[in-house]
Length: 244
Image (cartoon, rainbow, N blue to C red; front, top):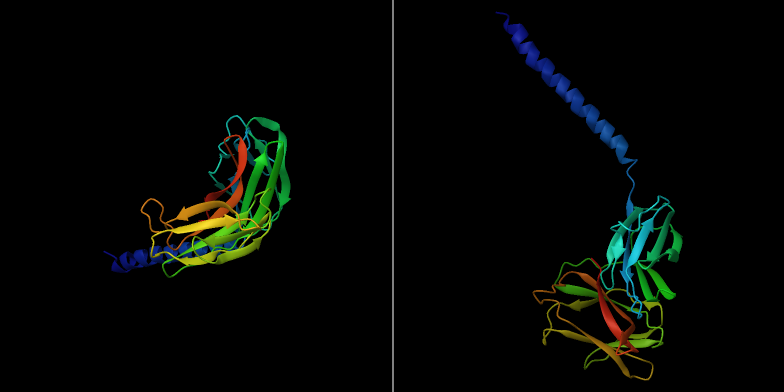
């Protein structure tokens, strides 16, 4: 029996395996340079007119079947869409009831995270595209951003009920940065109030960051002030959008 051959064979197999793994590693390292990073667009449907509708989202130039597409954004139910970072991409949005008419059609070249808000109605929509810069938390905090999309309220002020203003002069179609608040508060909840230039209360929103069904600790969220239809008239109200 040739023991030298028996020893030599496993060594040859190990050598071949090492060479194979090394080749795969080099190949993967080269392919890393070709990896395309993604930017994110969160589409937020706040079109609360009497004929408010779901929005259908089309990315790029490829054809889309509007009858079967899953790229649907319903009222107050935002959806995230990914596009190649720093690559010009066509974004087209139509309403479910009229797919022949675009309510938004733009070539976007983005990086990072963005939110695209829609308000108004199908025939007179208004949009706002803003970059999200969420806070990174290590403590028990919550980040809250305020966006003024009301077409009637004008410049607004935000305060916590019973306290001083935390945001002043927030103009139409503008947003604050994410503002940090302790997650635990004495009264368990924050009651945010929006007021117009004369100090009149427009709307309020209650947030309990530690509530079991609504945990927001170490997270970011956006509160949008916009015009809503209630009892056949327009009022100003808050809508919450999770920014995570």
